[in-house]
Image 1 (cartoon, rainbow, N blue to C red):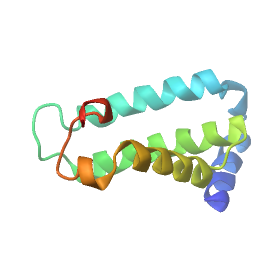
Image 2: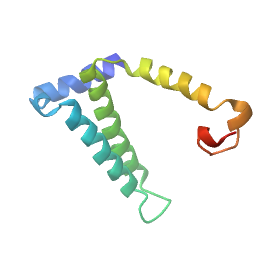
Image 3: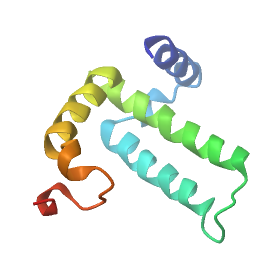
Image 4: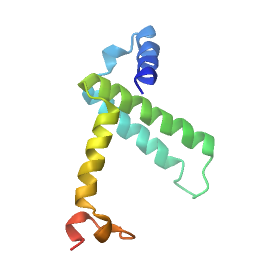
Length: 105
């Protein structure tokens, strides 16, 4: 993950784009690219997989840049969130159930 992030940063630095990459702008970009990903599915459930891959890659790029910008490691925050989710959604209550943890009973 660190090597990939370094490659993305190198790409951006070569173009002097870091000046545009405040945490706020990166968060906005993640939301914008997520909308573009949804567009792939807008009118059908059989999207062009290459378009989906490119939009997903854009989202990952911005997520990795944001994590770097705020000084966190993606692996660490994903593990932390997974642990929290395991507490909120124990298998005994959540298996096969799509309800929010506050409604699991």
